[in-house]
Image (cartoon, rainbow, N blue to C red; front, top):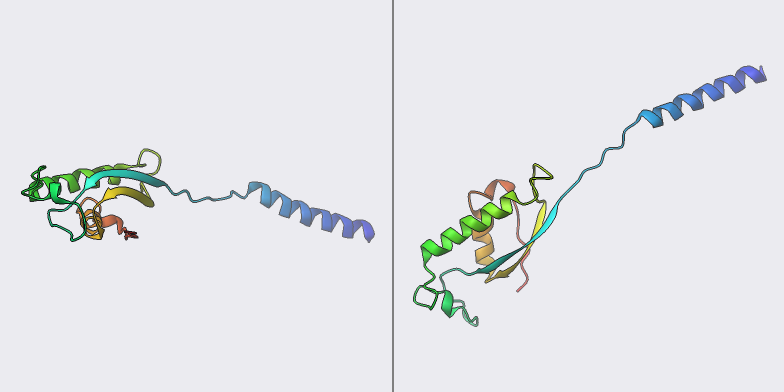
Length: 124
């Protein structure tokens, strides 16, 4: 009887042990990035900010066409970041050199990025 109980217990332990060996652990991998947007300014003056050179009549002649072009270029780069490793690309991204919340909203709303559903955390 003892021998049968021992064999039963040993076979149950072996069965659970074999299940653990064959079980595969699944991990989820996410990618986080950082990108310098290099003076992403809109064409509207913000009171209290030195953004005069990024206005249509400023030294950079920063008009709507240049702004929308820059948004498209930045959105394309952000959309492609990390896709060589993960098809879904970035899960989160930090950025620098942005004028305000509005330009970030324009960026994540751009058709290239809109499907990602990114939200914004902005600290002035």
